[in-house]
Length: 269
Image (cartoon, rainbow, N blue to C red; front, side, top):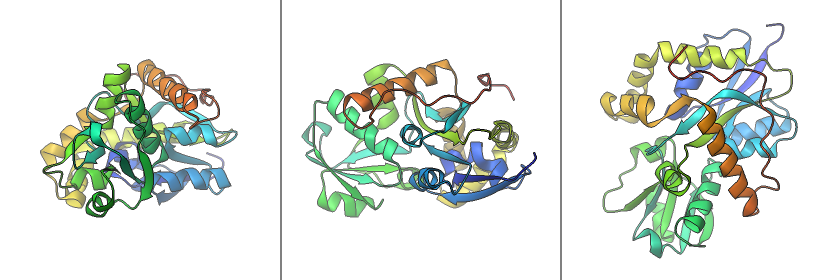
C-alpha cells in the first residue's frame, strides 16, 4: 500500500474475528486506534481516521463514506451480546436505560419495542452498569462484553437479534466497516482472514478477558455471530434503515454506497 491507513477498531470480543489482524499488527500499512463503537463513528466523522468499524446506523450519518461489502458483525438469531434486560415482562416496560456505546442498538430497541410490542417508553442514556440502570428504569440495553458477562438471573431478557428475526425474518447487521473514498478494501479482508486462521487464539484470549468458558465463547464467535455478510444480511440492513427512517431516526432510508468488492462467499477465505 502506498500510504498508511488510519483505522478505528472496536475492542469488543464480538469484533475480534474482524479486527484480530489489526490488533495483532499482522496487516501492514495500518495505524489502528481502539474505541467503543460510537467513538469509532465520531472519529471517522471528524476526519481523524480513514476507516472505522462503526454501528451500522452510523454509516448513514457520515457524509461521503462507503461500506466495505461482505464484512461486518451480524447475527441470524440469538446474538447473546446485545440484550434488553427487564425487571418485569417486556410488555410492562415504561422506561429504558440505553448503553451509550452503540446508537444502532439503541435505535433497534426503539424499533423492536414499537413494532414488535406496540410500546413507546421513555429512553435515557446511561453507562453500562446493569444494577445502576435497573435501579432507575424498567429495562436496560447492554451491548458487547458487558452484556456477555452480565448476571441476568431473575430478569426478562430480549435478545435483539432474535427480536429482529421474529419481526422481519432477516439477520441483523450490528456493525460495518465504513471507509473514506479511495481506501482499499483489501486490508479489512486480510484482517478478517487472519482472525479466521487464528480463531482458536481469539477464543482463548476472549476467555481470558471475560472469564467465560472457551466452549461458550467458541459457540458465540463461530455460531451466534457471523462476520461474512451476504445478500440476506444486506436485505436486513436495508430493512433496518427503512424502519429507522420511518420513525425519524434517520433522514433517509438509503444505504451508503458499497466499496467495489464482490460479496465474500460464506465459509471461504
